[in-house]
Image (cartoon, rainbow, N blue to C red):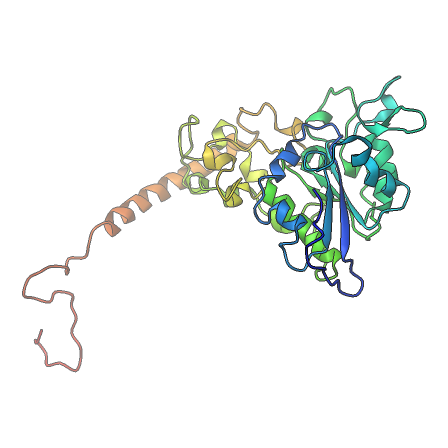
Amino acid sequence: MTATDERPATQARPGGVDEVHILWISEGMSCDGDTVSVTAASQPAIEDVVTGVIPGLPTVHLHNKVLSPTLGGEEFLAPFRAAARGELEPFVLVIEGSIPNENINGEGYWTSFGNDPDTGQPLTINWWIDRLAPRAWAVIAIGTCAAYGGIHAMAGNPTGSMGLLDYLGRDFTSAGNLPIVNVPGCPVQPDDFMETLTWLLYHAAGTAPPPPLDDQHRPQWIFGRTVHEGCDRAGYYEQGDFAKDYNSPKCQVKIGCWGPVVNCNVPKRGWMGGVGGCPNVGGICIACTMPGFPDKFMPFMDMPPGASLSSLAVKPYGSIIRRLRGITNATVNREPRWRHNRELLTTGYDPSYRPKGRV
């Protein structure tokens, strides 16, 4: 998918750019779920960014194997090869999937992206990252696998997989003087990624500051709160009212939900068009946006450590609050006594400018 020639030219601010390529490699240890997820984005939609519907953005050329209009092969690889030679800039490098340790691959390779034109041998994703990341204006890790290793990096895996932070190092900065930007999720929430990408593109155009990131390189405004703080079920937790099965609308902490300690905005934002999100539709939060996922959150359906103590502590308070609120609820569900059709005003209304006893 590339920008059309008919779109109006964008005037960049001093120091900004008016055209940018997005080189998207999903050949890490991945299921390509993040690419598929992003096709559902609407705030903004990826096609709106590419076709110039969003005002103020640079002209964007997207190179992604799923969304590419090319027939694949060398035609698709051409911009990647040009960037590796230093002949294409500026570009944003998007990595999807975890990075395997090719130092322990034996006589083979774990994953590849295209072949070496001279030898015909596969080129590993590590080869591409080593050449593209230092030249990239910005580097984005899309999804938890690329950000922190994810499923492929769990204990016992033979590939030695890791996230970009581990591979490039936390001190890495791009050619645009930006750290790695992590937008985790398994898969990524589509609007979270597109909102982050759009902010970066405005920054590239010279019309916005760099996006604020937390200590895990996540966008602060997206991952600054927990699932619990945005969850529709959080009120049940406060009242010590917990679900015993997955058909209940109550708080799911006792049946495996990690929401109180997980940084994610999905209950607030939903999944597609504001609809969905794990706890919103009866699913527990398994912490798929977190650096410790999945190892620190398994087995998924068991009560999280500490949930027993915290739920026990809140239960006496919650029980009292629930009863008091029940009394208040019953009271405010009755209309006031003075609402009647009799020939008498019974509200106690007695203005001082009227004679005493007059109704």
